[in-house]
Image (cartoon, rainbow, N blue to C red; front, side, top):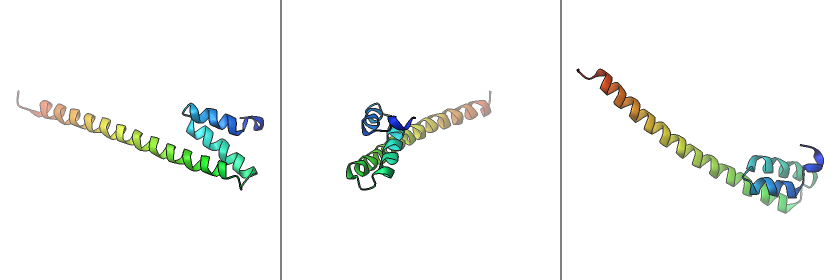
Amino acid sequence: MAIEEKTKTFAGIYESQGHYGDALNIYIDLLKGSPLDEELTESIRRLQSLIQEKNSERKKIMDTQISVLEGFLHKTYAYKNSPA
């Protein structure tokens, strides 16, 4: 990403599209140039929270998928090892 593209506007666009990591990176880069900007600091906190929430939701989905697959494997092994 070129330096001229690193603006609050582009970060906001990325955020609205769900590209939280890209938006967060822009806000962090902008904060380096304006370390006292409270709006940037709040945007970073908000995005960190959104990313953490998104990761938590993904983990729940993956845990459910793993549980379903483990159940399937258990039933498959039980069927395979049952007397004919």
